Image 1 (cartoon, helix red, strand yellow):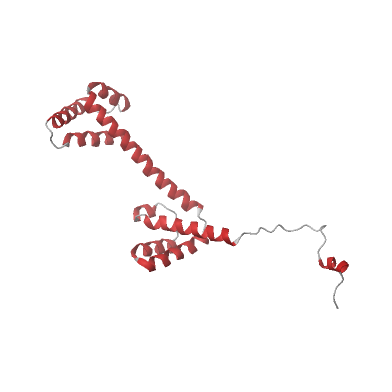
Image 2 (cartoon, helix red, strand yellow):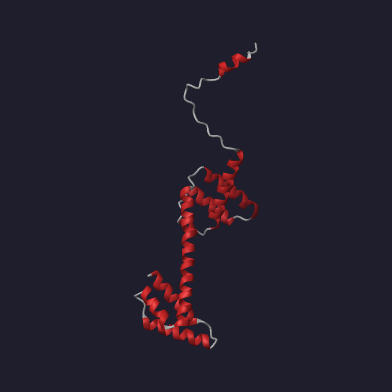
Length: 179
């Protein structure tokens, strides 16, 4: 026996009851999320063992990443998919945070090196004026040693010799910055 149109609504629950909220996720969105996790896994695969130590990974995921680093060609792609699948079942936020810190620390170090290189160039070109600036920034710097290295760098530059003292100035500045 078929239902008449006015009886169709008999099976629909009343709106008086509290409805549970259902969140629908499209298949495309699920695929995008999976691809993003595979990219995260690929970034993790590019890291060395020292960097991986700084990222909160469980033992299974860590061993899968280390295995993927050893594999070549098609097997590597399949291993990347496995890593992506493993990441889906884990909280990815701490991993992303640690990875961002690693990248940011690298960027900060590069910026520091650029700053030190510019300071070294000023020291060689300007001499005592720049030495005063360096001593203001780094009070524990040795003025006499710094001036001797600057003189040697200027002599090397004038004589077209290899920049040994030039490198020594940079190393000295880096030691001062790290201290």
